[in-house]
Image 1 (tube, helix red, strand yellow):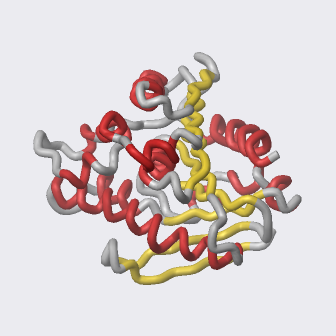
Image 2 (cartoon, helix red, strand yellow):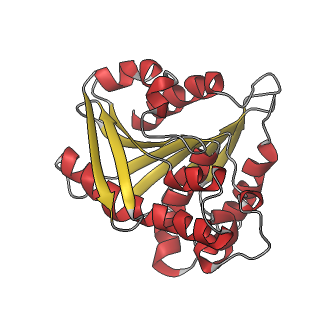
Image 3 (cartoon, one colour):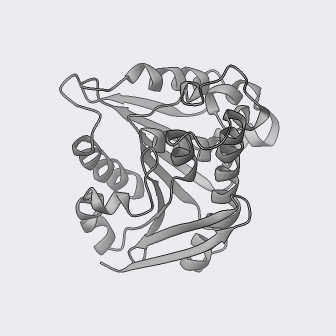
Length: 244
């Protein structure tokens, strides 16, 4: 399996960032790590192994970048307002640094990307589609945690948080942005077993549905835990359906 590792200093995040690519062709997929995971977390947890047939068959190429915002939240970096700034800047980094790098690697300046991730990675995947529907064609947001307010340990939320969270901003979308987003799709599969909370997926589904943004929640049942074993089943299935 072809693997490429890149690193640069992000002007938006003001720190070094890493992005990894697996594969040589096909639809680009940006796979976000969980919580504070780094770009190679998905490989350590064997996601690349189960995606191997899709990658080696040239149907997808997978990219992953450090979850800088998740790490800032988990480690309680700086003040709550600083962590909200990091969240917004992380999304800006993805759109204006990671996406150009992906498009250059694909040798296609207009290629559209599928966003995917689990847990807090699912939050980023859904946010990417909702914030930047000009770039992201769909999200596969597995076992999502969509209301991040509890991680900031504050009652004071800034504009950085509200522009970053689809639950907070979906109701205010309008005009060409909303028109484009209505051509996109957010898929939210979730178990209902150990450590899962499918109500978070339903809350986002209601917020998107109220704006007629296409979405679907898939329940994998009460025997399915919030764990990599679940996500390794989910992602190959849904990507195979999505890329044809």
